[in-house]
Image (cartoon, rainbow, N blue to C red; front, side, top):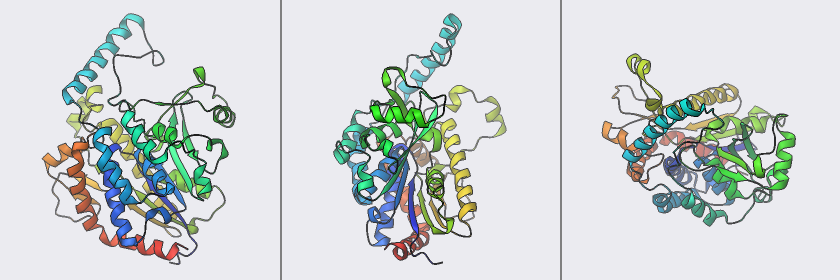
Length: 379
């Protein structure tokens, strides 16, 4: 297939510290490519930790430099938290919800209970600011790089697609956008965005039911609530400008997805605490995984005969199998326990390195194929 003059799209999923896993795969991609990924694509899209990666690449950092940030700052951003305290906090929340609901008949708009995010976001902001400083989102337009970041407007209950092609986002600080997209519910606090010109235009061009938030502080949270895998949105934003599907090369990087298997007995008896358990967070992981696989299927259908599509997503399983599948990385039950903490735990760094090493080995040919495709397409 002729790949000259094709539009190259990079996309990276959300996943907290599991962005370290994505970065390891991308470092190998750079080695095979023989140049940095920051010059390999025209559009960089990301959600949450993937937004940090996408913006850093578009800003000029290499995959190795991004990996170094995870390695050096991850311990401060994601310090080990006490599981017993987190479970106690969840139990307290459920008890309070029951008692307060009986006493004062609270609803979803007035329910603020005895719970706080796991992290205050101070170290994440410090790390992000070291890279981007006070730079605004409009800088990507000047760099001739298109960047798309996914987040979620909690006041108006709609997704936010920060697009560097749209002038309404140009005055927003990159740090504010990234802190918003990375504000995983329960993990980090929301980010208030108050830039006047943005707020005015955001309300005007959004749904007619949208309104100004109290004190003009727009609370924005993790884009994973809308699209943890941003690849489909990135593709649709490109295609809506009357571009042809045949002109696309799309490379999408995941942060790892573990197989969650629940039998009939379990699912018939699982309650709120089971579905929102802090280890693995089955509810969010199921929602994210379902959306990601649907997105993957739609993209494959759209680009099957015309565009070029690569998806690199380690599927992690602790069940043995006789059949080889290049997408699957087999781990032990003990390693699974470590991985299930990886979203919020720097101590899971070792298991992420093991998974990346095994995945890279079984996907070496596919990584080489993408490298060759990009070499032919880069002007």
